[in-house]
Image 1 (cartoon, rainbow, N blue to C red):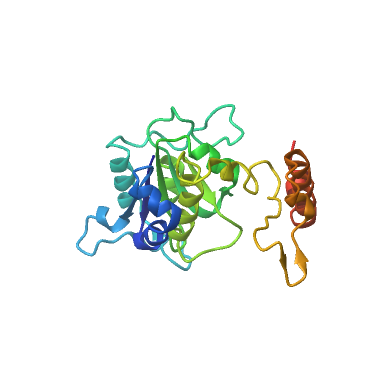
Image 2 (image 1 turned 45 degrees about the vertical axis):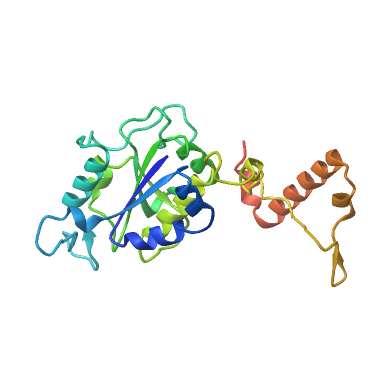
Length: 249
């Protein structure tokens, strides 16, 4: 899988993705992650990528020209085709499938649709993904209307730039690729993979400061352990994130 990240601050995304499991996955050739500086597509001597907004308001807005040039080049030179396209019949309506061409591009923005585990599971099917990082007050609306395939948000808050969000999305997607995690079952049992939060985990020692590992986990009865874990996952979800239960079909 190839993931291209376009940002004014490419090292913000590149640095954490060079570490841990995702860093090792890149070394092993399981995923290729490229961080690009948007200024490389600016054409004036000052490498300008932003300007003041029409109509008057505080802040700066990222310009059309360098963004279109960057994304069209990363897509292989093809011109924009009139805005976002939808994968018909998909529960994640704005997301691409594996036969989606050209490579989809998503803008990281606090105004985007929520990025969830289900979205990550859709995006990992794409062989080439492009992530455009929002900055300042955002991007020219023509980028949203005529270039990208959707907007993604990692939460209801505002960051100083979208490179941090791009790193989060990249990590969540790349870890689902075969071979990235030491045990593929780990991803299947993650929180949100089945609509519930993950059950509690314990390891050695059996007892610590008077707190003991639940006896069921020491029993060796795998069917009963599975029942216990399912019950604890449901219990935690009801206590911490009841909204997840109300959103299930």
